[in-house]
Length: 201
Image 1 (cartoon, rainbow, N blue to C red):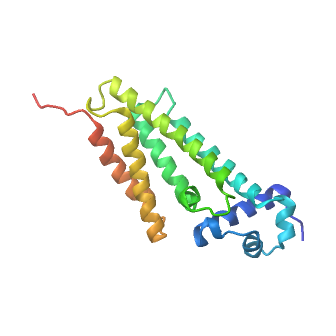
Image 2: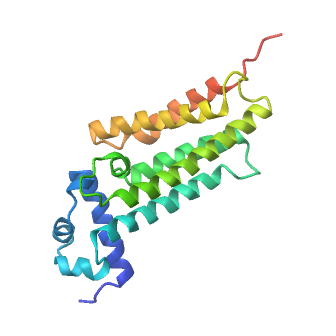
Image 3: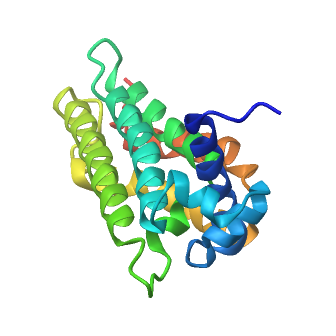
């Protein structure tokens, strides 16, 4: 049997880590469980990731890269700001659907401290994501497309809150099927409430 390349094996280990983090919780993911999931020995895991923290940092690198790609959508000058907001939020919901353990990795208790650096990296990327939401809201307000009594920071907070409400439902139900469909419906409603009132002549 042909041995898998280092990159392929690392990708498998990260995938198993994400799956287990959603299944049993990030704080219960062990190299032993990862090895069992993949039919490997623990030394085979350590060959690619010498420390457990190395696995979590690789998880953070993978997800942070995608969060930052989603934030770049909000900086596209050839797309109207409202469409950028919509695309950013939907892209993030698709990301959570792909990696449903992500919210719990960010907020779960971590008595061992092994997730500290991972959380820091994820939170930094999410703050950058939020800053881009604020910038889009500022543009909407400056061009008269957003109600003047809504501060851009508050607009971004409402959009992040929409994501968080869907995430809470995910954590409670363990069901990702609602994220994109329900998220799109609620997002369209939220953005419609951002718009300036139009008075009939």
